[in-house]
Length: 352
Image (cartoon, rainbow, N blue to C red; front, side):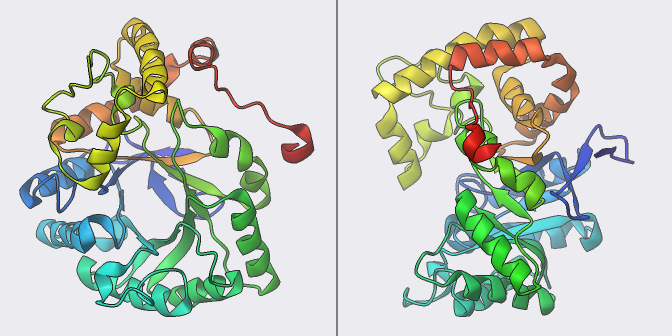
């Protein structure tokens, strides 16, 4: 069930799975921006705009920009003197090389790293606790019971209120839930997967049984697929990216990887689909980014869509997608499926 924001910002809140926690339907992430591509002043401006628009959920991770993203978020919360009870802050633990000189115990989901990694994140955030701590990808070298017990330990100590997973498989989540139930402990309440018009398998297929059986909520990321679904690359010719795009100007490794995709067969196929989506957006009176975000929000299993923003204006445009949800009728959704040809068909034997 969604609730209107009492400040009349137009924001709505959704329950995070079956928990009692409510998060804004659109949230602000810090991957690839805070502490790096966007300087502190720009990050502060984006966070202030997010708060003013009714966003209460801010997501980060220990490894985002080598810990700088957490530092920037902590500085902003302190600078604006926001009440902690008004915010939902999450971080993710696994790739924690930033915490020490020797990698071997400074990453993974061992009891040692979950406790020490979260304590280090809280120090960077200048917070006593996070609302959600995610296991940032699975750790298949650590026994699942150890991981479940460690996350319950940090919850019992008041360092986190809930825990979840990020980019885990359905089987791994189900195993963690089962162990937690056997031990009468708290299981993961949320998964953070990639989900957009072009990437659907896990959310629409693999996780189907988990929504009801485990009460799993979703905080999805990459709604515009690293900018592709925004339409900004529709006119790209011979791999010449727009200079005002992140991948056209950034020199980090992920940007290098994305530039390497330009001109590949998969890139051309996806770009052709995106070009065909443009007339739908124009007919609805919205831009392609808003179409992509609204499409994700039409899924009732999605608690919040994590978005990035390099400017307050970009964030304001993204949040406006909430006003257009009713325009995405079943007929429009079917039209999108016809273009992409990737609608997930469930196997009754597995997902029935």
